[in-house]
Length: 277
Image 1 (cartoon, one colour):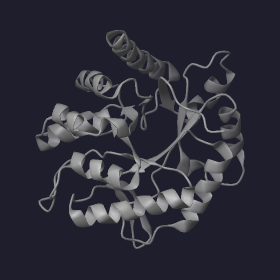
Image 2 (cartoon, rainbow, N blue to C red):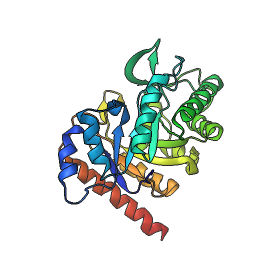
Image 3 (cartoon, rainbow, N blue to C red):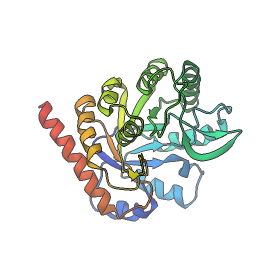
Image 4 (cartoon, one colour):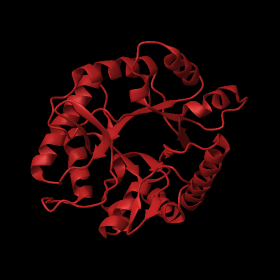
């Protein structure tokens, strides 16, 4: 039975397995897993995930759908993914507005798309195929960007809006990615939030960035910076108390650090609830 998500979760990392399993009280209400790491039929990683799934609702986050690629969709990948979706019944399944493969070679990076009508038609077809293969709707995450394509004809928010309208997919909005892209490309992060279809937003992500010479780098390896917290407050006002993930992908800290970030996000959610009341 698919479970719903509430509150603030974290990304499951092997460094925190035992702490999450041995705690007498669940320190977070839900966990997100990188689904691509759990596509085998068995083995230690699957046994550990089974233990985790007995205690925590799960969200599946993917990096291997390569929805923006012109390669034929990888049906073998989707077959393995569907087996795990059927097995663990995650509340949400997500991937990115990006491509990661060319000529069946995977680049292990999220490459952005130009926002053209041709790209939109292609993404609509790919998302529809993905949803048919999985038997579930999926949610699509906005990328972080360091440049913009001169070929782009529409904004990223309009692209996401039309993708949602034509496929019924949901949106995973990474607040850190919005801020990074806005600084790097000179647009208003607040206008970006206001342009999104609020009813489509199913999950929010929070993460840290690094300041580089002349741009921000989306490292997902630091605490959330205050400008992102401020934007998160605006996001909660716009979308309501949407399930939120603290995402930390590199230089994994002790779980206590993640717990502090979770507490901050929960405080913002509580403020939002009080204002709504």
